Amino acid sequence: MKILRKLLTEISIQQNLADYQLDTFVVLKEWAAAIEKAELLDLLVCDVSDKMAVETLVKARKSYREAKIIPIADDSILPSVYVRPDIFPCTLLWRPMETEQNKKAMLQILLSMSELTEEEKVLCIRTRQKAQYIPYDKIYYIEARDKKLYARTEYQEIGFGGTLMQLQKQLKDSFVRCHKGYLVNKSKILAIDWANHLVQLGSEIVLPISRNCQSKLREVYDAKDGR
Image (cartoon, rainbow, N blue to C red; front, top):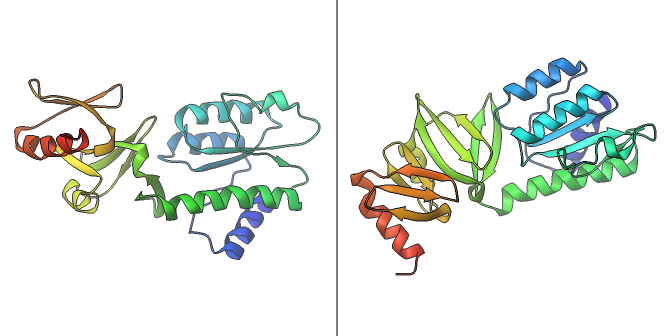
């Protein structure tokens, strides 16, 4: 793991990439526990020589569908162990770690992640003194609940601090308020039931509409529908 940290740090400095938080673990149980507690994960790199590590990657993929997963392997491990749909790795690191091939693979992944934050509209979420970036088009809605905000993607709910009013000013071109407790992504609005005061996002998410928000929401919906 020291070699991996050195490799990532070296690439980030050379390419002037965005800040990131890198956590490394030697004990598998500690790593598995950290993954369960994490609110958002962008990248997972793991030695797959241990059965528990593979099982943890499977669980992580279920919770973090958009995370990039990179197994570390060698000739002693059959590809069928880690190249499988319930892990869906984006690339592979091959032991020994300090090779040009591994460096190029990690550089490609980090650059693709950096380009995402620069080219697309993203919401910057700061949790535990680190920054996470979520593209607007991945967010269905943002909810104010229990003195926190929660961004809902297709597979996750990420909690962070702030107020809905402040966020509404920041996201006004892409999100609209449908209720005092919700901001919805304009591009995710599939249908609106005006009679029952409900807005449908995607195929499964339905949220309430308050009377105070009907006028603005109707304006947005009509514009989206080309009326």
